Image (tube, rainbow, N blue to C red; front, side, top):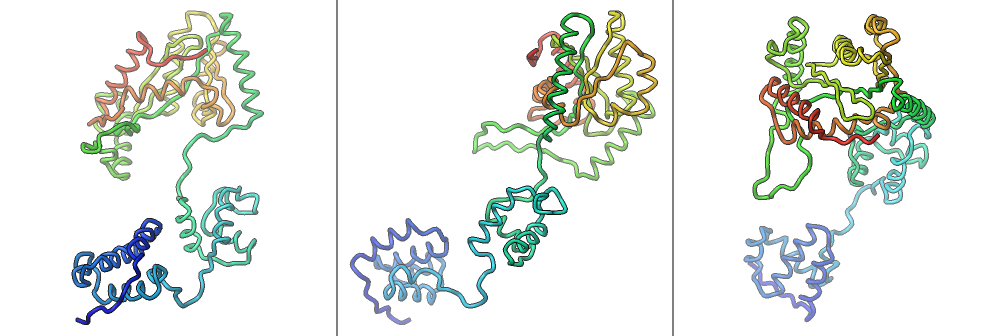
Length: 372
């Protein structure tokens, strides 16, 4: 083993301490840390064994620091073709992601790597591959995911729907009609717990999705078959979700609900008959506000609407206006917290019983304050 005959300047340790605080690359930090131990007087073999570095590599970095200072610890420029994606090109790509693809004659309304590479090549003349674009976007903290959230309604349709609802609410306040805001929601046996404060030492682990997608699909298929045949909750032995149909009466906190294994036209027809059994004796027209889903416009509802002609009618909102104009949307959020917050029900029967209990208790002690 050859003896290291190198002399370091007097300010070597302060220089290395400053360099260690400023460097951001892990490899360079490790080199400077090892060289610092050698400068402090430790033997090369001891430092290489402690920091798991090869003896020859450590000796090379020590020689470079002694002759070149801290710049000798940084990687030298490597030979080869320079990278296509420069800093300016990456910045241009980052700004392009925030723009509407349709404004650049793209074929889709959401960006893909291929679309970005095509548009970028058209604007800058630099042809990049899909993988190069993906790497740049990944380094910019962007992820390829499905957007979640509400779709924005047409402002004109939203304004017009608000005016129509205001007229209906005025008639309801005068006692001319009974106004109901109707919607439906889905409850899973496997509840998604909301974010909260958890102790790090005892981090809670919940079986969020204990079944695979194929198992869920099969369980739901068996549940539908049993429900169509028997129409009885006691006959359901499988399934992972159920639907709740509900409507709140304007001016009150009263929620008229129906729990079904899955939401279909037949369930909606039975729910309309249930509502009319409650309000038909009032001799007032019942107006039910609902979204513009396919079930609310199905031909199978024609016979039910004809049966309650001049006593009941559906008032359909414009597309994507339900979250903005239907007050029962807020009630669903509170109800789901009460039913399944951080819970995983072993079967659909327990979820059904828990849902009925929460909705029944709401009739006597409201869990959500509707603002009229």
